[in-house]
Image (cartoon, rainbow, N blue to C red; front, side):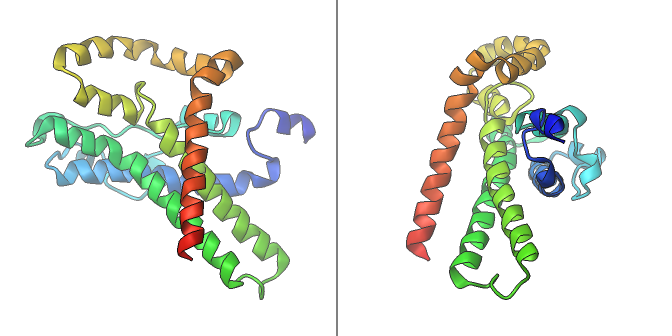
Length: 224
């Protein structure tokens, strides 16, 4: 068991909670993309069966495996056709950020519930094992959703930050940016598994996520 733990980003006893959080976080993330695009007039997500809260249609094998190995990953991208939007660039940006914002909202709501339960003493009447399970689940909901929010805003395909950048840049620059798409997976593997590259790329981004989480916790403490 100790040997297996060396290859995982989470302790083995947390895996069931991580799986449950992933089902929720990935499903809500991709549903938010699909629903937003559909409401903006693009029937493509509906035709592909993505305007649904069924986790099976949203999970990506590699992205899910990376969660357990590296601590972050992605779900199956939602296909959209911007030509169906009245304002393709603006609506393209809104569709792209809908997913990460859903993770940020899940993070905030989980942190709020956790904070409220601890402050009110609502867990004190429960069995110790139940208390531990609830707090562990909420802690993982908070941390994983913040990670997914930050990670998905990285401007590399197929992540949402890339699609935001693609819609912001002038068309000629966006076309040049598309040339890196075939190499995106190799870039990901390099920055994830090579420590020096990880430290100068993903490290500062996740540090920023931790600062955002600390800010949310501080503000919530003052409000409650």
